[in-house]
Length: 230
Image (cartoon, rainbow, N blue to C red; front, side, top):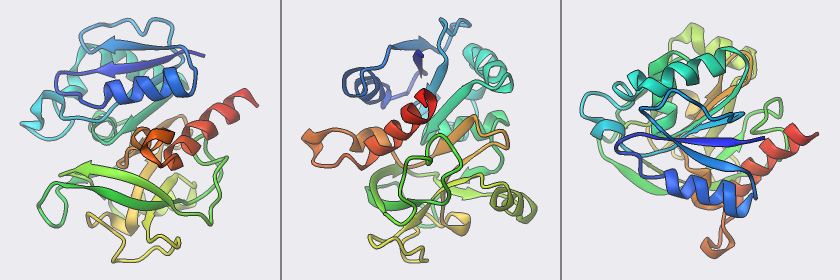
């Protein structure tokens, strides 16, 4: 098992992700520059958060055409693990690896704060080891985090258990008030039909260190590793 964290111009959460994977989770982890076309034998590809290419056109729209994405898409289509967080989620939607789109927050403001999310099911690598009744406190930091998809796509996501997380309150109640950006059905993360490509807006890597007094995000990484090792 080898993790590769893709670095785009404008990525700013790559170091956080590498730190958690390498130093906390003790995994073989390398950085992959966006201009390269070699995944260096990585089995698990991570697209981190940030502002790839400054988000000048549309979040993730330019990064989707970076040279390395050809190999990332190929890796995903061959069943390989790909996980995008925040800007990484946006890139995955722009690349067509995940359905839907991330739109401007309803407030039209950048939001940076802790929110609560809960797993919608236990049928994926990210959620298999989580308690569906427990709310996880995970930070968000985005201006375009409102997940949107057509009614038909939403029906498919629900039917296939492709919804990873939903925004909720601290007691696990999914409410309008607990939705920070106006996402359809409070959706905070989804996966593809074959459940090998994952995207979420909240940042689990920012809640995975005892020094931060919050390790709720670490549970997600543990779920990934335990499911794979099992």
